[in-house]
Length: 109
Length: 124
Image (cartoon, rainbow over all chains, first blue to last red; front, side):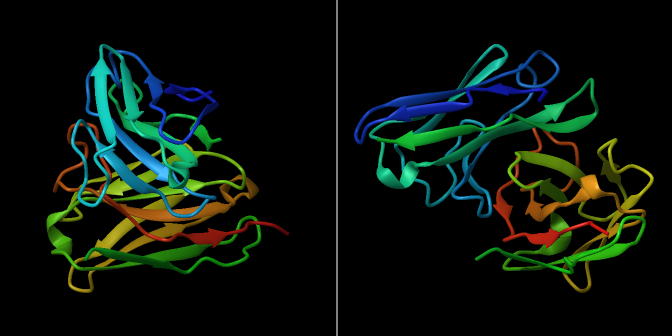
């Protein structure tokens, strides 16, 4: 059981807006910035969101937000190349450990 | 351009040891904390260990504490993971990852760059 809870799967059509969520508690998501990592076909992860900041080279259709203990990654204008697994991660103060969500498999229909 | 290249992964028997390396380039290595993250076959990402920019502070997941040792040689721009008493459940692809800060933990410990990974199968 991951400390951070993500949807197992999300799907959308090309051009659609989708939102992935990452739920935790005050010891992790509620207290720290959250990173979002994209992994295509079990290749190396790629950072797509850095707290609320977009890393260099990542399209601006990706955006991040947080409300309380839930972080969200929104992809506006879904593209076929966005199909991947997405993981959220942050520090957990009570566990004294970095924690990851279980990952969301995003399918572009 | 930041580059992280892992090496050292190999088929290993339970109880044996292995050392992974991560060669870094494209940035001032000594100024940034580094970490190891692993992924078991068909599973999600799992944090393993982290080290501050100077190497003076190290951190471990409970699952590897006492068996794994993270270190770095800032003169060689290389990160290491010494893995002892390996178990079948340590079988995974091991990724090294860079943070944009010197210390660990800092904020949410966000990773900004990742290596390609190196596979460590542990089996008799």
